[in-house]
Length: 125
Image 1: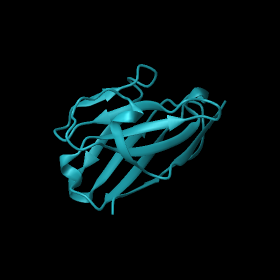
Image 2 (image 1 turned 30 degrees about the vertical axis):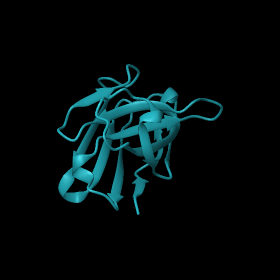
Image 3 (image 1 turned 90 degrees about the vertical axis):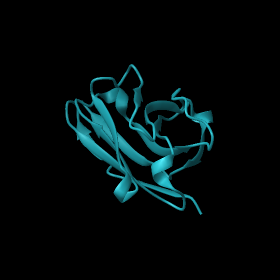
Image 4 (image 1 turned 135 degrees about the vertical axis):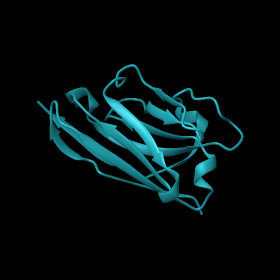
């Protein structure tokens, strides 16, 4: 069965950094585009960053230049390096796998079929 497990969240001051990890199992990880999404209380889930099976990336404008998505296929692990964190980055962060047969990176939650349990990121000022 497909399983995605996030870790690395926590509390940090504005301007600080965190690195999130997502360990995948139950499928051929290296062949799937993967994404990071976030959701704050009372708000819609939004796309943060995506990475294709070949390494192509796409970022939300709000995080471009501050966040970096990467993958280690040998470890079946997805990463999100978050630098210069801001209070508006506070949210639950989710790792997700793109639906089979689709490759376009659109930062849309509907393009993904499996999700992790989430890890909380809190940024204080």
